[in-house]
Image (cartoon, rainbow, N blue to C red; front, side, top):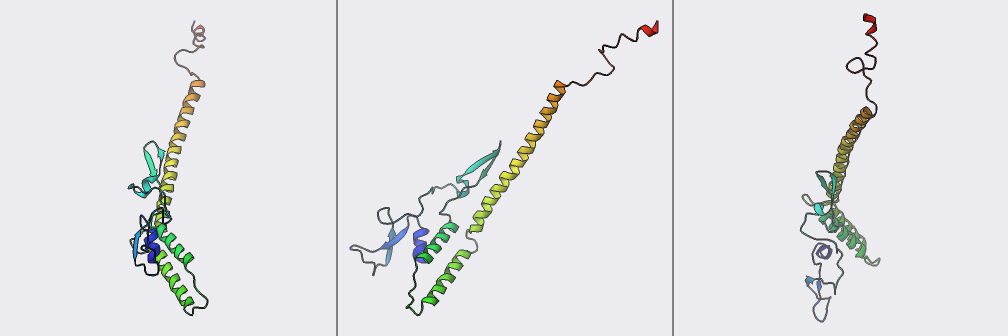
Length: 184
């Protein structure tokens, strides 16, 4: 488990320093991996900008929602490291302790994936993305309602311009001259 953490949770990844000439049987230290001697599992953006702020969407005239992610966030790299350990570990059927060792490894992986208090979890990442989605939905609803109301008001104004209200009794009516003959 320690080797997986050294590899997946370090930048650059830590690898076994086998010395020169290489002797992996007696190697006891780590060294920085290089593109020439190891695979870099994460090659994405790794700047100083907070992860969530690495991607943003403007959802209104003055509202921006952040929704960025990086594959090397602690919760994700822990997941990858633990799955890698499970995938890379083999157990010999001829080893009487194989079942016990397998169960111990599974318990260790399960504890690692459950997370520790105060450390990032997959649920934290999901919550950040859900909050961003909710903000987009809420802001879209607010702006859609405002636009719909503005369109309705403009439509009413246009209707008033194209269909003026009928005049009724005051000012300049074409029937004003008909009442003058009755008074004579």
